[in-house]
Image (cartoon, rainbow, N blue to C red; front, side, top):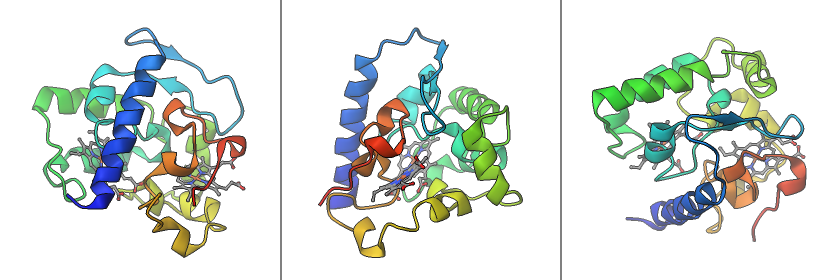
Length: 175
Ligand code: HEC
Ligand code: HEC
């Protein structure tokens, strides 16, 4: 395991703890209380169990349905990892991701992503045009700092990412 994956492991462990700290009723959904960059807190048992063990549970509204469909049909080769699931769990999670995707419903985040990534289905949030544009002030060298490791390590800079808060006030780029 390289340092990057170990880093993700630590982030995931911290994530698991902060999930425990918030007792949202299972199956329920609570809305974030803030601005555009505070995601509604979504809860879905299998998603939280299976998709937040190696990294944080990335907000479904940051990718279109087509991206989630592609991703969920290739979990055995998931960014170099085998993240495969039994068919029932996979279908259950896909349904949840589709229902909350960037092009489902009316989330502000989703419409911002779709405005720029209409006809694409990237597998990475970090490769959406929305993400690249939003982060264009972060210098290239910063992403590869040991304390960050990868743009996918949202929580390195967004200190409340685990709670769905990506607001500017909660950003601190580590040294
Ligand atoms: C066995 C570990 C593991 C599991 C389980 C896992 N992932 Fe991943 N995932 C990874 C790795 C490793 C990456 C690449 C991270 C990087 O580039 O820093 C990744 C990347 C991603 C990305 C892209 C992040 C970006 O760059 O924008 C998404 C989206 C994603 N995973 C969603 C999921 C979903 C949904 C599930 C549950 C079905 C899941 N992952 C389960 C290991 C895992
Ligand atoms: C290297 C630190 C860093 C990492 C890692 C990072 N971001 Fe950011 N993010 C920033 C900075 C800096 C901004 C710009 C804030 C601004 O608008 O001035 C930003 C902006 C944002 C915004 C808009 C916030 C606002 O108030 O305009 C969102 C949403 C966001 N990031 C999500 C993510 C997600 C999701 C990930 C992981 C897939 C991620 N970020 C990874 C540093 C980071």
